[in-house]
Image (cartoon, rainbow, N blue to C red; front, top):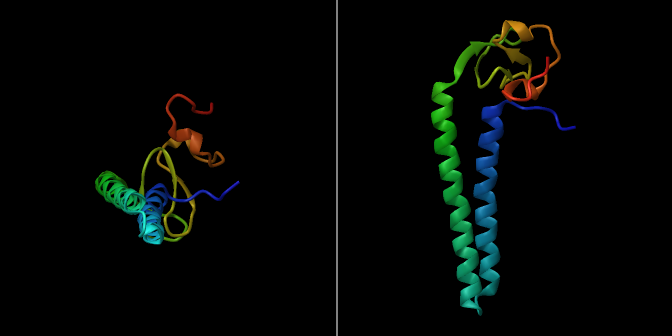
Length: 118
């Protein structure tokens, strides 16, 4: 299983990968210069991927401004937390603001309202 990362950093990484995917798709389109329709299709798909990354960056920016800032008890640095449980963005320490979850093992399911563990 992949190690869990901070939600904000994970979404930002996804947006950055959309930019790279868009550039690569547009670059692939250059190999089809003789077939202008195919080249145009690849260019449009690449631009759409880059525009999608802009939307994701704007969305995570608005989420980040509303996120709760807390000080990590492990490293002492400020980090932003989304949901009931999250990881520190610096040292990946499991964090929670819910007193009922103190001392329990970290699980991302605690953030899903209809699938919470007892």
